[in-house]
Each structure stands twice: as structure tokens, then as C-alpha cells.
Image (cartoon, rainbow, N blue to C red):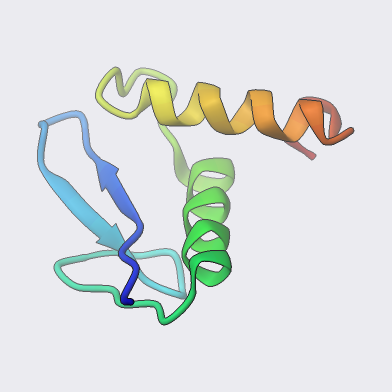
Length: 74
């Protein structure tokens, strides 16, 4: 199974997140954990709060981190 971390920009265009946290056309991961890690890193470092297209993913990540004992996504 191949995994792809997706991020939707404010323009509605969906891109994938590379290992070095760039938005690219194709980023393949051979495992779920590596894929989720790339998505979380991107959301924590680069998510634009005014991007309503990605707001649900960012809010979900923040809730999951808080539930796991991480304060303010740290």
C-alpha cells in the first residue's frame, strides 16, 4: 500500500507533502506512520490559519495532539 499526505491550499488545489515539507505533485510513502508524520509536520510548521480549505485537518490534528498530552501542538 502506498500512502500520500494531502494538503489543500486556499485556492482549493490539493497537493502532496514531500519529506522535506514542500508541496509537490507526487509524494509517496510506504507506510502510514511516515505519511502521517509528514502531514503533521507540515500542518505544524506551514499551515496558514486563514486557509479555510485545510482548517478541518489542522483542527483535527490539534485535537489529537492535545488528547495525547501535547500542549498547543508542541
